[in-house]
Image 1 (cartoon, rainbow, N blue to C red):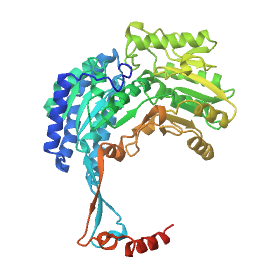
Image 2 (tube, rainbow, N blue to C red; image 1 turned 90 degrees about the vertical axis):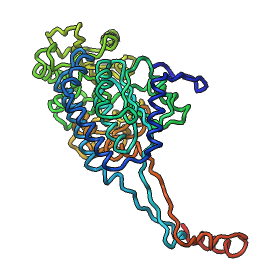
Image 3 (cartoon, rainbow, N blue to C red; image 1 turned 45 degrees about the vertical axis):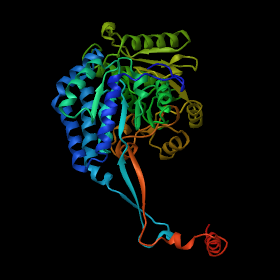
Image 4 (cartoon, rainbow, N blue to C red; image 1 turned 60 degrees about the vertical axis):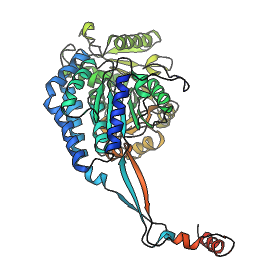
Length: 481
């Protein structure tokens, strides 16, 4: 997406986008509150779309990547999303139920308060390329459960998948309820549509542009961004176990995950042991770096960026450890050899921006406060990963270091917990979805007061105020606080 544009500058919205938005808004106004049965049927249709087109969807994602591990696609894109849809359907009736709230004593007798979750209307979703099904269908589960309609713009790097979804989606949903779009450079225009809510997942730079575009219409946004999420290995935690768990996440999707471990803190003196375990693990898990289990880097630009980041670190004095050993990656397939970067410094590119690839800087530390001070001196990350069995040390990092989420003694897995909200904080994002919080994000929690047969406030506080009304008010204030 392009850089942010002035709030005074108008963006021309393409006719196709405008027509779809108009149709969805009209359909919403005609039937603003679909019932439980319709929402449940729509969730089932969302799941059927995935199941009935599984092979085509896997193939399309593989074509977009050049090579995407089939297991990683099925696990992270299909299994997790189907679990999300099932969990949403299981709780939907409860989430839709109006909430009772207490009544102010002056409003009696017979008055009631309710909070009624109602659909917002038309929701826009801007999807990145790294997990294109997960990051479109998981939020769609919440959007549809809340009774909304949705327009979904796929990434420029998801051309094959976007074309397939545009083709098959009308078999499951009318276009005035759900429609997919390919990119065609229309990101700024899409984020300038006056949606009732806009969800964006991607980089912080683009997130700022999206928020600026949405601001023209006062469109509320949920931004799921990235950042440099650290793993912190405590002095009590086995280095071998830490390497096993961190490497699994770091190599998944070739490191192209917004909640991935971006760098690791090790106790002083542990870097050499950690590196040896990482080399052994990669050799065991990926004996052929050019094989189908190791995912390609998404495009040539990203491949070149990772190469430049490694060269920059080497030129500035870091020690590089090639975890692929003697294996020769296929550059034509964009297979990137994973590396550790030992002794990184702040001026290196790998410590200045999110890496989004199989490069892992390794820092060492002497005490926990040093770690907390370092992380807190930078943008708040999307996640932190403390590895320690010491409950007090776990609580120290959770209390002293703010982040979007936390996995303790593991990395990434908090994102897959269906009863936990997911979201960033500060530069790593704003707002939540997943779980009940997703339903709430895409709903208007509408407060409704129902007056009873008698209006006590009309009886007690009628003007002129100088007499009975003022005396009563002063009496009430006296007994407050």
